[in-house]
Image 1 (cartoon, rainbow, N blue to C red):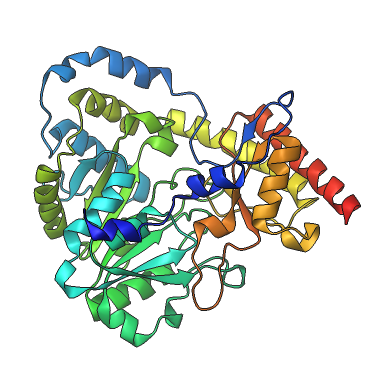
Image 2 (spheres, one colour):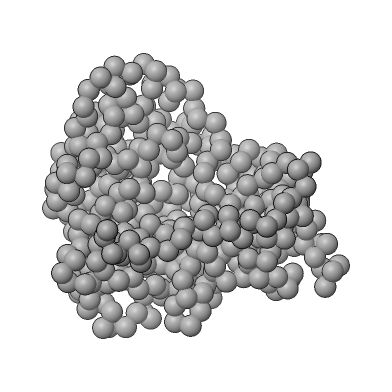
Length: 402
């Protein structure tokens, strides 16, 4: 067996199952799950219809490159969303089976195992970054995202010796779980570091369409505005899962540096990750439409505007820049660690939240997820409100017990 598999850590939800193993909440209380970031809003009917209308695609082997129609649709969307010239559908765009598998396989493409390089990751982070790093024969270096820095990564804190060995940097903006968004100055700093040390930037932007004010800038947009019109050493990754409420379709794309895209296509040809033409046709319909995205965003805005003031009565939490997560600090007002909070909340009120320490690693002496919880406000508004009210009541009972 591949010995690198032994380096993989248990997934956060596996840890959560073990944490809850001895707890049995009251079965009379309905379960509310804020733990997993899986969209629960209804899939738009026109996307369902596009799937039904294109079932003939099931009778064909799809090409890894994807259909021209899908790549052109994505190019037009990138132009419309980020106000950049439409990237070349032939060389700068590649459909993927969502963003998760692309985040993983991109590392296998750009990393040379013989170099034993470093991959810089935000901390807390999406665990695929770490797994992809280990299985590509590299080592992760975690840059803590803490409240004092508005949950942004302080790249100035990374030692020169680390940058010299860095081959890939994972960026997540809007961030999971913090919701933090990189601004143009932060992108400029990262691009300067990329030019100096030659590493590739993988920009994970799957939460880009869930925001509460101005649309977050993306990596390609930042590069273009800063004069990097060839998108050198930059790959952005996005998907329809959160934007269009279709996590089961597994439809996304990468875009950016044409040389990396060409090598990524070669890898994926052998990897076997071509998207069904049925899914591609439905994806075109989704990328071409913004009305359902605006309606979806409005539901999130309403939920967050209702939930945050209520939750602030109980915990230290603030409105994120974007995404559908709240990143709440629990110890200061309850005396409970993140794991104790999650376990007792589940046992007494049948609400699941994810302990923040499960989403991070200890780096530079701290675990930046310690004593925080992640809440995914993905359910319909009434269920989200009920869950928030239960958390507020739980904190009140906990304080009475102190």
